[in-house]
Length: 91
Image 1: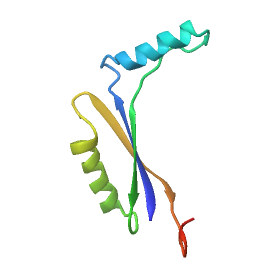
Image 2: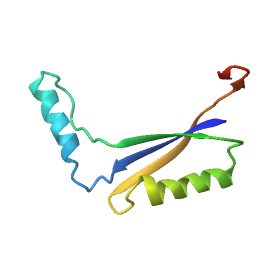
Image 3: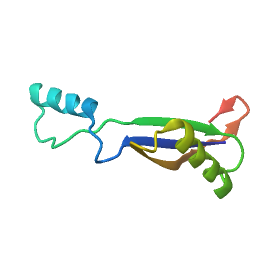
Image 4: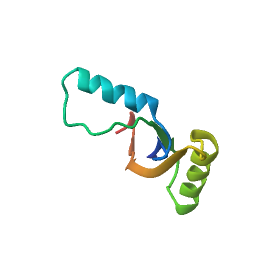
């Protein structure tokens, strides 16, 4: 079993009002030196079986059709870790 992470972010040319709100709050709270903030989404998928190129292609298809809006968002897919099954569960 493996954990595959899909990160979804607004495209650079898309206005990010949530990121702007966080950036403004940082300034008001005295946290300087932050030039910009962009807010996105992170999905963690626990995948059964071996991670093959075909399986990753299927996960990219999931990311494109369900987890993101490709008109306004970009996404990346990466295998974060291989999870090892033990007698009591996952280690």
